[in-house]
Length: 594
Image (tube, rainbow, N blue to C red):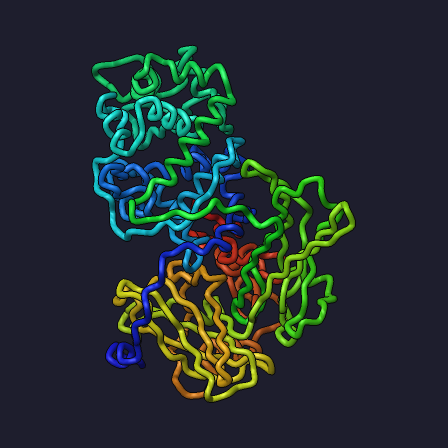
């Protein structure tokens, strides 16, 4: 067994990752249908939730600590360290942080994604298109409590808060109205305001429009904090008092003109998401790529596939005649297996301008390791006869093998009941003892690297390397990736499209797992699979209804996260491939927690 002393003697600290934004990654994320589907259609969010409203609210709560005179605070990611503040209670803000981090690539700041989230949420709900600037820097600490204008606060205190942020009284009214055209109040958080589980601010619950202003001017009293003054409960009149701070001039103008409301909101929300310390210089605006695509390849328990991919056309509606997706093999030759790539029909969404997209994923089987996939190719024929193309290349030289037989959490008495991390990586043959295979991981003390041990050949195409970390909790390990430096100096990596693999999404290693040795013999997982192949019957396992043999092991398809409802290669679902958030298999169905 590896011991902590040996483990830490192998560690070497690397340079801290810069927080500077990568413009190209953001330009793709702006139109990534998988990202936008979290807020599209506008009412998406589940029972008593609205994701678009939560994304917009998150940006304001992050920006509210801005001090214009001092040049401090703003959209800087501090909200991630304020989730336990009283003013941020509930599941909304932690959920949004989880959603954002799933798409946060290397060199892209969380604060840039917070700003982008607000922008696309407004666009997805039919609101104005807001320019996206980038270059925000994360601060990795909270911005202080007591900065937020609370419903029970006086109108004068609200005016002072917005003045500190750099907004006039009229602009305060506009910004609150623009924010409260989406969402509402939850009784479980604000029971002193409403008894309704989710009490909406206006009547158009799934659209960004001026209904919030009309309701105020017409005194419909739909808004739970747009009620008459009650000295015993000032919170219920928060919006009423705020909106009337200039004698209702601003709100009357909004109620009379949707265009005025849109134009004002576009200006104020752009200013809000651009609030930043004076030391930060924003760049842009960014324009999405006209044609772009993203997909995440993966290896799970020896099967080579990829998560749902997305190919997008931005603002090209009516300008093209065909939109096709093909692939090439690892050697660059054209892929010809029609069953390998399943391409969905064209769908449409908007961020203020139209996005047409086609999702794609693996067809009926996994990728043959001997041929692999070299790239996914997006071909678009325009109406004028010209052809436009986007090629997304894939490097499958090293792949982290995710799954509870290879890369998983290991606990047990033989590991002193610590939470160990077992990482297995498949490296493209041929084997060379001068190749350097490593796991790099991020922990509470920075980024570190650990050399991997050669285990042996998995098949004629890939070799297996392994790293075992006995106690990942003791070092605060949260993310990791696989890295390879070939003997010829070429470098390769698998960091899940620069998002990195997260330890909180891994399952437990299967029963009987042992710590692999550092000599070239089959790892415990490989040995179990080999033994299972010799003993597994051809018919379903005999444990009773709800059980089946999947990948050479007997699993409960009613609860197994990798084979939910059936074997993943025979109609079942690998729940872990759906999200990096919390997911379970319950009665044969994947249940994702927002």
